[in-house]
Image (cartoon, rainbow, N blue to C red):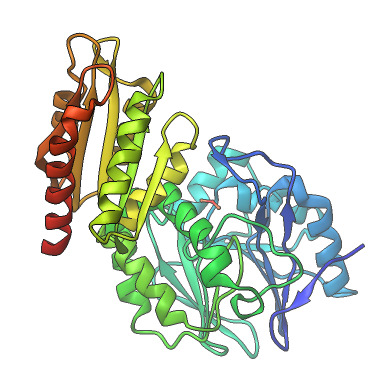
Length: 401
Ligand code: FEO
């Protein structure tokens, strides 16, 4: 049966959710599933904004049939040709042979690479081109690398809606509620929206800032992304989050302590440090086991926190394997502007600290504290002063930020 919702008087939500998929992009755990959003505009011309992943294709086709009734589909706007959003294009071309696909030149090229569609009817648009479909006028805005090079967004000049492609999206499925003011977005969705942004688009901060600059000239009453809830309340608050994430500024003053521990001794040092920080008045502290927490959560937390403490054993003469993976992930996502403290452990030839320091020095604007803690197999009572000095240095640097 169809499962659609009205977005406004003539725009319908025809996407859906997938709660079965374990890993988005075969990388990122999605315990709460994912939505693939698609919007059907029932104007004089019937216009579909993107399709969905084929995993929910049947639901999607039923939704479209229900809303269209006896009408036909005139245009399919493809803003982002990644298959989670356009894998149903071929099915639509089959059902609606006169359908025109609307997109930019890069989208056309990449569609052919993936799907070999018949694109004789392709309507190629470029930056600031408009398409009048009756009551609505759609304006196209290029958004390269948010998240792929071909991406464009669409601004509905009539209803002041920004169809934002992947931007402003989130992991997680809606549960009937469609809009941010129908859910507790700040408490229940923000962490997954952050994890989605930082892992999927985080590397491309400068490009995101470019698009935010363009968007700042628009009167936006509703943001309609390709994943997660639609935003119509407190849009400025959410845009501000994007400004922070895209400029690699810490979102909050806080400490993320990540440890890689085999026998629990490096974990102990992480806990002792967390206690010392708390005694010094730090309240925003999170401690994670790098072997237990998926790196996507840690990348997201690193974008949130101003201070990172990495505690690693020395392993195969290097950094603990899962810690090394995380460091590569942080670098790949272009993380910058953080203060880093290091705890190292080694039963013989302890080198993890030196190697982690060199790693962070290869990243942009990462300030590694001179003070560090070195352990030989376990943290000893005699090292109380050493850990206190380390905690003092961290707290002092927090005051300086
Ligand atoms: Fe949701 Fe970049 O695809």
